Length: 566
Image 1: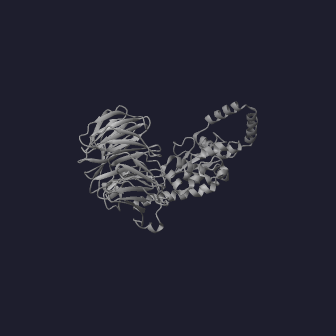
Image 2: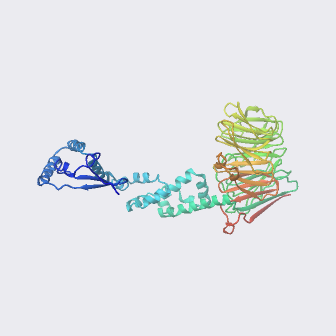
Image 3: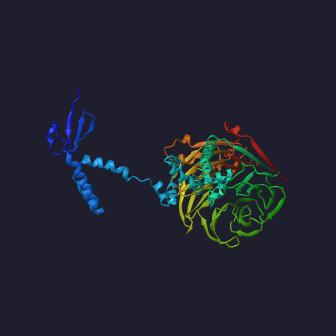
């Protein structure tokens, strides 16, 4: 049986009260009834009939109220409110809420402040911007005339390397960053462009996960070839090295739309188009060929031994050789600008950036150089501590990191060149390494990849899967890509690898098998991997321009360029 209790406001705590108890106390007030059935309650408002004098008294009060100043009116209302009960406060609050709400986006243009309304809405993401367009016609007008979809795309291009690279490759960057609205398409163009960009990005991510790619193969042949040993890219050229006794360089007669960027080491956010290919075979000479006519443009001569490592920027090429020297070349003229003689054995790796260069050698030492200019390079410090050849170095403004055949990674202060700590864990010599922010990723001849926290020296994760020495490794914010002497390239999920709860079986996203020899070097960006191998090939794995016929396959037909060294 339902139990019913009746409470009369303003004392709902009292029980079983008769209605007529407060009948004479407040003839102008409504009675509030709370009817409870044990689990729920219903609020019922019961109006009292107004007496004849109420209307006259109300009109008189309003007359006096209108004659008072604003401050007096506020004080009077505050006094009235203070004398009311909680239920009355609720009614007043419900009455005031809609009066206090303001459509500032509509109101600002009426005051000539369109730019403020546009600026406010420009902070919205795509989902919120879609919702804002549906609020009313005025909001839609502000979004359209303010070109807010264009501004959203521009913001993404400025802050996200994937968006920037995609804008260059798809060609819609030409419609961005125009000073005058009349210089480009209307807002509707950008409104329809945005979902197409999102679809492109989702397709790229899916291609990475599923291993779908468009493969291009550059075949390099030489009588004494021992493989394509090193490479680097920029907007105009690919520089690579073949370990033989001759130097040839050629380029494809036409650049494929899929032949796009690969990031130079340490410049992961540069996006490039491989319009020209320079192939530098590792020896004492360099030849540069015109990409269209295939005519030899320059011969760069200087080293007396094989070139084992190189890096270049817009001004210079710096090379390290088995002749123990480091040479600096003018990237445009090919002139030798400087020769650095310090190491006693082969220079195995080098890095330079922002006026600093670090070289390492088979002689177990690391040299730190100050680069005021191409011709003004002075030795700052020699770092000694490794017990075997130093195979690779990397650095930033805080740390220099080196890895050696002695199975250790050593960390040094960039500013003082003092030793900081040693990272121990690999069971055999370390062949490759990359360092960025707090993360160091290394590959070893123990067939494993290790992730390290450089600040505390802890090993965060061990990645297992390669069957032979891990020769090259690169990572960005999403992925680790590794190449090994087993001829395989593996793509790993970086964020999962940094999560100690992630099962080891989920870390390797894809294994790419196309090389028939050891993988010597690779680099990658958001759109592709480019790798070189002992099999005398350079492979371009394009995850952006995958033909429709290959969407349901994990491998795509390859396109081959052949370069023969005589």
